[in-house]
Image 1: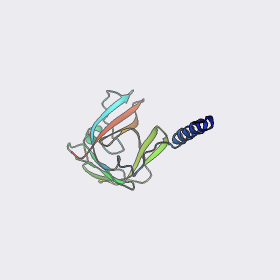
Image 2: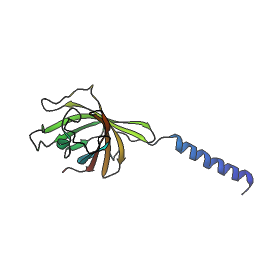
Image 3: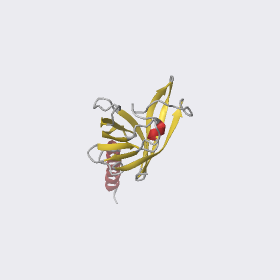
Image 4: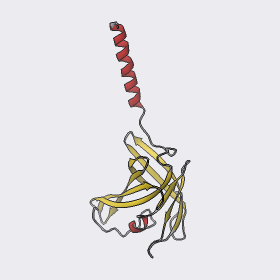
Length: 167
């Protein structure tokens, strides 16, 4: 191998490395990892709100207790539903239809956002109220989303852990 060929080889490797870095990794609404039926298996608090009992409704809808076993279905094209079982008297059970999408702000900042357009009576459903959660983890079987909150002048996040399948 001549010196010229070595330089061409190194230049080729450098171009491949730079081009792979210039296209950021992204998650999309058609990502097969997202498209599925999901069950919320836990909701934890972190930040200044860690350990606090937060009885306020989440997503202008239901308490943490009501959402903690909810079933979510995300379909291709950004349509979906989530279903609250209404296991206790404070939960308004039933399905909520949503429109969702993924917003990629950078190589490592991916956000799941949705709005409700149909819900049981008494639950806000309009196309102008967005709920946005950061995607912390996503693989074929589980997903972790963080929803920022402020409660009694303390800030933090609700950490939703989802597993594939319905319970």
